[in-house]
Length: 439
Image (cartoon, rainbow, N blue to C red):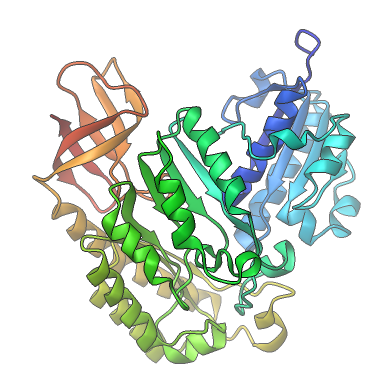
């Protein structure tokens, strides 16, 4: 106890969508009188009473990481470092019956939509007036905005629809109110996220409303950058490209997981687009938004991917030269369409070889792209600074936090505060990061 207040920590695993859920929970707890322990503070020194782990259950590696975090929390409880452990999120939603039997030391398991029951367990009444308010766990100058929940797609490999349910758009007025609150708190960069951002509005308004929503967010004072993540390639809304090209606030940046380029694999993935349409879409992006930085995610080793299909993927990456790219190997997930209907036919060793080769090709592309920026002057948002060294790190509009590289900058004069925008001349580059000098 600290001045009569219990101290709580929420550890967020997995994606930024989980982080938004954690921040809504923390706002409720903080308003109810709980003292919040920063996630990065060493647990042994934090004097935490209650530890809540918001888990990920998407793929095998993420599940294993979440389970390990729960086991470490249970061990800390046994050693008396913390008093209570609660687990929430996708993993406990997906394995609601198995986890309590396997890890009985946990004080309570709650699903992905169980903030209110968890609050009740902690003797906190849910405050509806805080529905659009957040306790930020990101640096104060950027925040994620989750515009919808769930997904109506049924991609072969994806467990999210089974965990999070169908697509449900958040009402526009709530998102505008939440964004105004974030701007008032000092947020400069708004990162728009969902399982499928381009589907936004179809369920609630019977039309795709992402462009309309972005236009409203664009008008909010204090927000200087708006970044769009997790788009889907099928029926991509043209008005989104128009506002991205015309607005000074919209980052010329798009995260759109394409997954593959070969027709047989895309068909087996149930992706609703073929290789030709995928290529045409990338060309459309480049034409509609000159200078756009494209980030994509690709998958290797999906059932149906032979040497020919993998060579098609390599050619696709070489031809279209994505500024940013992530990749992962297919893993068969129980409950997915792929697990029920396809044989996991590619050996694990082959998956890893293909993944390594693909990422090696991308490393060269990323290096050449970053080197092409040497000598240019770019606007940088400061993320952290070191006044003693006279340096700071930040990002341009073409780098998203947590997944992309950063710019390391030598200052002339005083070191700017985090959240400041400064002009930087790029002086060096590698495949991930840039170096520069503040003007």
